[in-house]
Length: 448
Image (tube, rainbow, N blue to C red; front, side):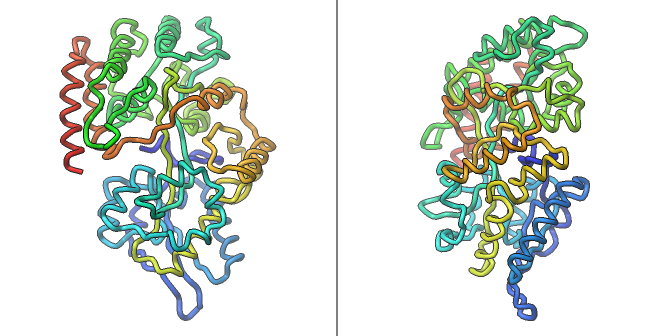
């Protein structure tokens, strides 16, 4: 599942498929012009004016540097719509170079809709500089089917001003779930509608956060072989018991439940919420759209000290793409997203000039000299209080970084029911909820 949207160093954005992208996506060699034409998606929508202009500028610069390639971008919102993704693939309407979440990779390969990039990968200049664990996500049975572009990891966003008002040290954020409970109670006790801790519990987002919380407890959702659920465990019970107790014993989660991401962001932006789980890309949304300030927003690692959920995105290639289209697409990815200090995601100087946030603690995409350059340029152009995120960066070094489970959206839908139950029913039977959810997940996994 995505975090808040399109991971950006610029203005916040969640981009991708629209009716425009449902138009036929034919491309290829233009015999008359001698150019190789490629269609690509995830172009920022017109409503994101700054990002749209940057994207168009970068495409134009790429075409000028590569006059034999014609890039035809498709804008949409968001970058991928799970409801129509498979239909687009099956109907032959997918772009030559198309956006995917990390969790899409095996499915797209299994249904034979991805081109094998292995014979061409040496032509992607940046490939060896990308973190190995991210490259591995797009590698199936030894073959390379995609290129990672961004990543995220979950942490604890908190309001420094409310921490101070509640007598808590904003430079010492909670490191355990017991400390989260204690801090949430003190913040809720401020009154005037203030909520100490909020969590999602609808639209599959509750299941997504249950997964992150289970990872933080040292548990897992699915067995290592991917065949059975592993939520009916002491760790799974601890997740639901903590949420139940914060909601009903501590009264630190407020009375309004069945929340989704926008609800919680509104609460945080209004200054009425102390903490919630999110990725760093939530911070500019809170500031740009919800009324928060960068000075008040801080980020800590996932409580618990065991693990955190990671996700991200990248690009795969249409199974019908020609060798020329694949080569052109790889060149485009290199220039657009994978050049440290340059391109749509890496031009931090341009971002700063346009008052977009630079310096958020995003997971590192690159290694070695490429990483050093990326970090150097980012540091030189930082315009947010990076000290507010140091705890997150330091804490992540000791956490197990775990990707989402297979059949994630189906599993999240099941887990939504368990999370919403403990937050809306004081007498919810946690053991029964876990047993029931475990059986349903086993059925999902059995269906492949």
